Image 1 (tube, rainbow, N blue to C red):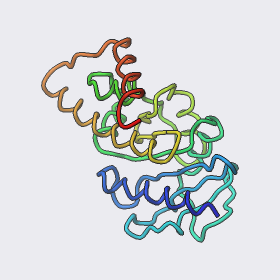
Image 2: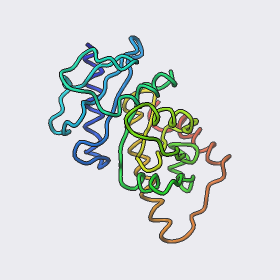
Image 3: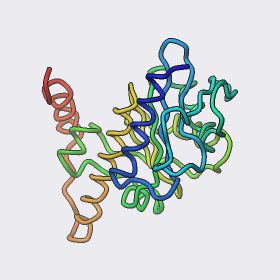
Image 4: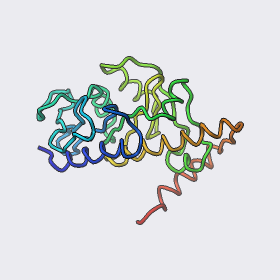
Length: 214
């Protein structure tokens, strides 16, 4: 079932430790199949070095396990709430990456201090309010607070990113940590200059329309 999507989700999960975004078994990546609506997600508590595509777990949008020998990620309820509330989202990544989570710990968004933030996000990376782990509260708060951003910092918790496919969500997580690290160091030197909203929007639009091979 969904063998190609399992491979993509596996590859997305493996990129998390390779990019320095997770430790031990923390973090997870999932994807939704646009045809069936089913979700493939990392299993709970399995070390990344032990993952294989066939260990990914298949769920329906109500959380029923349809395939897989292992229990799904404990963050599955969060992922499913987001998928149910955002039909445009086909991939989700969750990490506790160090610098981005430091901003989450103090409840501070990451303003558009860098052209890289404008390019990738087009706006400040927002912070969602604290929500208890385990059920649907985190997903509901993500939906309430993320707006048009592909990333959100959840207060006291970590990072959630969304995208139209697996790799878009993973890339957003990588870039969130990258800009968080730079902004953290900039704040040690002084007060960074914020890029005006209209210029951030222009840079984001230009990046989306012209960057890379078309």
